[in-house]
Image (cartoon, rainbow, N blue to C red):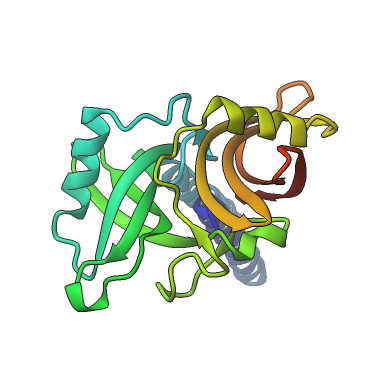
Length: 260
């Protein structure tokens, strides 16, 4: 799922440590059976040194700071655009246009998560644009590559606790949902948002952009928000907040789906 790749190497290191511990016991047993205590002590030192080297290697190749950090600014700067273009210049089959940088992760280099519009690059397969999160890795030498992408299903996320991922391109934004002509939030839309979440306790939501609208008897909105729990040392994360505004201008909260 989104922003979750940093957990995998930690599990690998635990498996390696367990394997080395088992190996150490086996080596000690062999040495003990032969009655050579000096050899057993030497084997123990050798095994412990090997274990330390494996752990050190895992720390060097794995994330140094661990998790993803929500970007302070979502703006696609010229520098970020250049990284994105470099990483996707040979991409075939899909066309991604970066709209916002969501998060970064410090590893041996840096991972970036970009929110992009997505559509097939083959003219015969063209559909209306959909949303995708595109992951870019930049190594310490400044070389960039695209590592993966995930298509966001705005319609399916409207009644789920977490943001849903599409299996393939399919029909863009099914269920009558559309990408707005402008992602910017107007004063009226911000007022509707604030009215809808006024009774929400425990988490602060900061609307950053509108990523979907649905015309009903009134309008449904999907707001991309920075979210942060009201507690000491809480970390920010991304959520999609769904708001309904009726024809009389009254608003209500429909759902909140977190990006996990």
